Length: 324
Image (cartoon, rainbow, N blue to C red; front, side):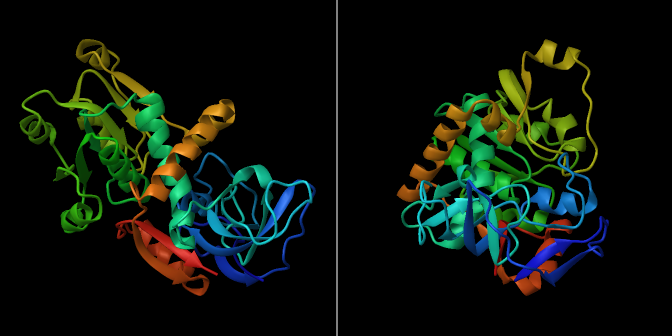
C-alpha cells in the first residue's frame, strides 16, 4: 500500500517520502480501516522534524487523524465491517489502510463526508477543551482567537460563535483577513503583529476579552497578556511562532487573569468521561450543522508534499486533507 513515511528526521521534509509498504496487520483490540481521507495537523509537520513532544523513532508512517470504513475488526468490537469511522492515533493515518485501537475511533456524524470527518476531531476537541472545559465559555462573552487561519484557530472561532460568544479573529497575514471572515464570520478580523491591544480595547469599549485562545506564542502571547479582562483566562494552546514566551507573574496578579495550559489529548486521557462528553458534544453540533470544518484543499496522497509545504509556509486558511 501507499503511505507517507518519515524515514529520517529533517527540517525540510527531505527525510519524508511516499513509499510502498505492506498493509498493517491487526492486533487484538485493533480495527483495520480503509482510509478515505486524512487531515494534516501541525503536530504531523513537527514530528517530521523531531520537534513535537511525542517523538516516534523513524521510520514511521505519518498522520494522526483520518476517516474511512472498517474492513476488519474483532467480533466483540463496537464497530463492524463497513462502518464509517473517524479518529486515529499519533501516527499511521497517511496511508491506504490503518490499524488502530477500537477505542480511538468514533462513528462519523450523520451528514458528514469523509474529508469533513477527518478534519473534525483534533481541531474541535482542542477548541472545546480550551474554550469550554478549561475556559468556562459563556454566551455573550468576548473571545480573541489567534492563529485564526489554522485548523485549530478556525475551529475555535467557529465553535465560540456557535456557542453565542463574540469572536475577534486574529492573524499575522493581511492577505488572509477576507478569507477568514468568509470562512467563520467572526465579528472582526484583526492583525496581531506588533501592538494590537488598543484595537481590541476599542472593539470592547475598554473591557478587553474574557478569553484569549493562543496557539501562536511568541510576541503574540506577550501582547495578549494586555488583552485579557479582569477575571479572564489566557489559554495557551501552542507555539507556532517558535518562541516559547515567559511572563512575569506580577502581570496576571495585577490584572487578575489566569494563564491556562490546553492539552486536549492529555485532558481526555486523564479524564476519559470528559473526553467522551467532549467528543459527543462536537459530533452532535457537527451533525446539526452548527459547526463545520473549513477545508483549504483536498489532495491525492501523491501530492502530500504540497500540503506539508503550504502548512510550513503559513499559506493555509483551513485544513489540508489527503485522500488515499
